Amino acid sequence: MRKIIRSDVRGPRLYAGFREDLRKRAIDVKRARRIEVGPIVTLLFENRTTVLFQIEEMLRVEQIEDEVGTQHEIDTYNDLVPDPGELSASLFVGVTETAQIRPTLNRLVGIDEHVHLVIGETSIRATFETGRQEEERISAVQYIRFRLPEAAQAALCKPGTPVRLRIDHPAYQHTTALEDTSRAALAQDLS
Image: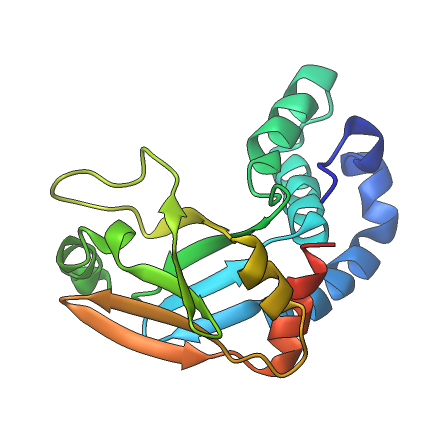
């Protein structure tokens, strides 16, 4: 998948004119890519549309219009665009009660060893971005990648292949089967 380049990004002034259109498109794209795994973990599989939307929104909110700042945002978020043969996702731990945020995150320390994408019978463990977890605490947002062997790539591209997300952490064990629309959306990332 092609990374975002400077000419893809409009910046706050020009973005205002098509923000609503890109927002609607991003919402549509995210619909098949947002997967809930149990009651508090959600994965959003990223692609060029989701990342471009995030960059434009960050530039708008932060009112970044200079070239250095714009390029910094592009470079930062381009890490979310999957490389060939892989899928990329943002993992969110959604806890709404303020008093429960830290205890919940503390219970999930080590989750980076326990998130799997299962395509057919092939289980691929997620690789987590470094710096978002420590020995005794984790961040509520994690960036992860699944590097797919060729056979798993081919299976993902085949309609009807069962695909599941599994978390087998001792304190959080849940599995979600993806609908075929989600499988198809993820398969597009491999082309």
